Length: 147
Image (cartoon, rainbow, N blue to C red):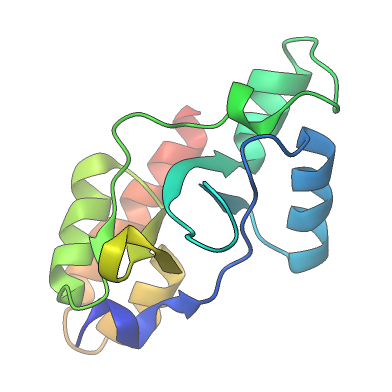
C-alpha cells in the first residue's frame, strides 16, 4: 500500500501572504488542524506548514493579531514530506521518527497532492501491523501532551 492509497487528496491550502484570520477560518470551515502553505494556487509547491497550534501559541498567545501574515508563523524549516508512491510503512516510520501527526504528500515536481494523518494510517495499517499503529498513536498522544 502506498501514500496515495491513504492520503486525503486535494487538501485545503493557504498562501504565505494570507492572514492568520483567513487560515483560522479555513481550518474551522474545513474541520482541519493543519494547512500546507504553498507558493501559489497554480504550482502548489510546499513552502511550509501552519497548524492550529501555531496560530494559538506562536501568534495569539504571543500578542500578535489575526491580520498577521501566515508566513510569520508557519513552520518552513525541516519539513517532513513523503511522495505519493512511498510505501505506507515509510510514511509511518517518518511520522514516528519526526514525532509528527500529519504529513504532506508530494506529487511530481513537488506539488502538494495530499495529507496523511495518524488516523489515516491507523485505519489502514491496524490489521497488518497493530504494534506499529499502537506506537504511532502513543507517540502522537505524547507529542500532544508535551506541547
